[in-house]
Length: 122
Image (tube, rainbow, N blue to C red; front, side):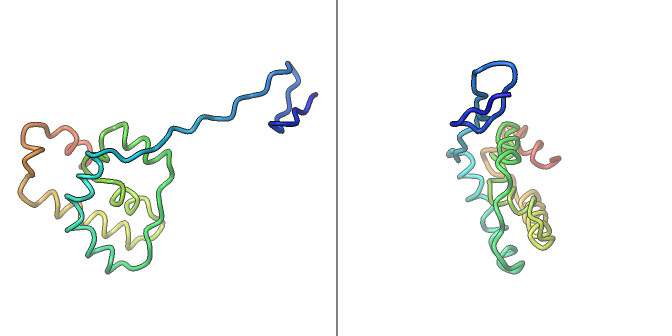
């Protein structure tokens, strides 16, 4: 058994180090930013009532939602609130999204509702 000094990884079969897991570089694009602005009037007052700071969700959770197109509708802040350990944050997020869905449909969703539908069923 051999211990490689640079990686602290034990290998018994060869002398090559195991690559560390690659983390996807996580960025917020314009569509996600727009979604946050669309939901802000609904979400911000409810989160203010809920109190405390909404913790960030795990990167894997956000990456999965980004790949499914859900963040194009919900934005990161609402998704973080949904996955918060605080039930008040989760309640605020669900209430804000429900109010958003009840409001008149935004122009950008009139022709293409697939992401809105995916976000609603997630």
